[in-house]
Image (spheres, rainbow, N blue to C red):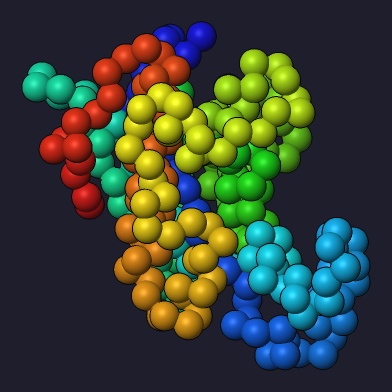
Amino acid sequence: MLSNIKIEDILFLDIETVPQYAEYGQMPDPFRLLWDRKAQRINSENETPDEVYRKAGIYAEFGKVICISAGVAVPKPNGLFFRIKSFSGDDESVVLKSFAEMLAKFSAKPGALLCAHNGKEFDFPYLSRRMLINGIKLPGLLDTAGKKPWEVNHLDTMELWKFGDYKHYTSLNLLAYTFGIPTPKDDIDGSQVADVYYNEKDLNRIVTYCEKDVLTVVQLFLKYRNEPTIDMANIERA
């Protein structure tokens, strides 16, 4: 039961990803040919590989991580606080190494858990794949090889909302609206991240967006437990 979990044992997170190259034509020829084959399999609208390339960032083999925001709830006598920290930059290896160091320490904590919205299908495997590609040792909470399903300490607010309905997908934005949580999509959404990164070169805007998603995930988790949400005055940034 969710009520039995100590909320301070959960690391809530969200990631933002973009294609490895700003444009289709910038890819090296061997990489481009591999993308062309991938595009044929995922294309449902008769688009060219060039046109489909805008979706490359969601695939770990063709994308990269530019921002990871993570936060923990901190119970205090005067209420529940939330401490959040972001790792961002153009050099993915630096971003991932910095986060991995923090996550390795958190993983050593008894009862430690990870939580994200659609994390089991996207954030957690994407981080794991990109860390391996960058030669980074997986922190304990991401190293799931050989573990039984009940040994994997991952929570997913989208999965929790399914209640066993495997075909049901609900966006974080919709759940935020449904539960009366301030929407995280009041500036940009995921489909605009690559444009903001490559064309506007506004990484800070993306970090703000990513942090809003993390805040929404923890607020949603509290709603699932029928508990008061965190006051915005109680948000601390590391």
